[in-house]
Length: 149
Image (cartoon, rainbow, N blue to C red; front, side, top):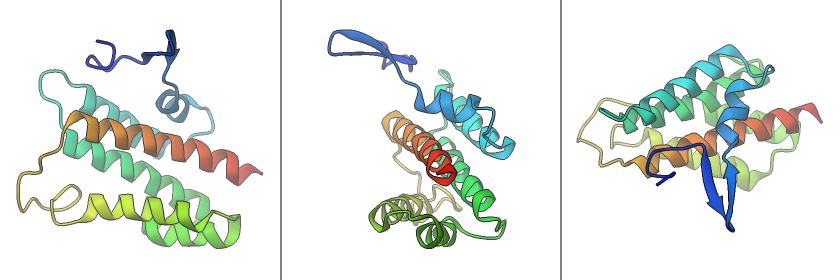
């Protein structure tokens, strides 16, 4: 029931546990405003009980990573792929991790219309949007720590 209603808590091994990646990414004082706006909007679109917009929630989630990567590479024109390549070279971002997020970006940019004009109505579900929001939030939190080392 907690999962169905998008609660910030889950039962894990008979204990109630707070899901914190999203909250940490949005509420952290060192998160840039543009990143907060994208993540907050993704959460808002996902959690709208009357008319959830999973497509745009996914778009906002990946846009948050792109915005953060542009900020930390000081390249406001970089695509996510370009920014990840810079981070791989300069900040020891593992190649497999870089490829993973490049592939997620590719997933949002392909012809099913998540980030581009709709060619067909995408069959996205709550679990797709939630996966992207949690994953993108966690990656932003990871990059914050990694870039400060």
